Length: 164
Ligand code: NI
Image (cartoon, rainbow, N blue to C red; front, side):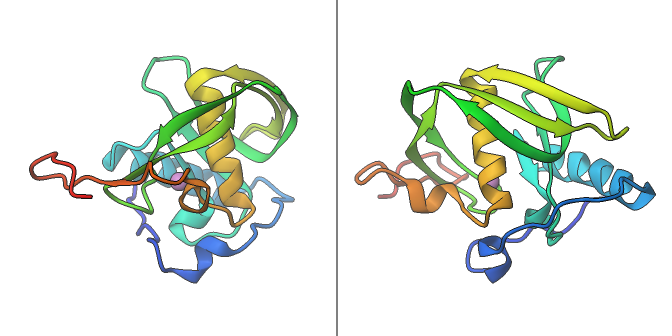
């Protein structure tokens, strides 16, 4: 178990595209464990490799509901619903910042699991949102650029008050 250093807003790595993982070796498995530990330490719902400085196509998600906990390797969105929703997001690389973004309500994602087995996920709601957010990270895109005008909020952890 190890907590890795998070990369934050202003770090150029967050704008870079991640590379496909060709071999799921012990280093990748250790990275996945560390990413879960790091995400849990900061109470995140998802984390992409790039956020701990690794430009590889790996994401972890945990919605803390006992079923939605995954590590996905080389995830690809193969279908997304036309129906969209404007929904609030935050990101561990942008502490205390929130804003509404447009996401598809449903997505279908293909990926590999940590055993190299092909998996297909059909997700909606929060899980679909988390998958879109994390897969964006692999393309060097963040929620910050997608925030709808007038919806940005900075909330300090101390008082929970809006400090716009
Ligand atoms: Ni994020």
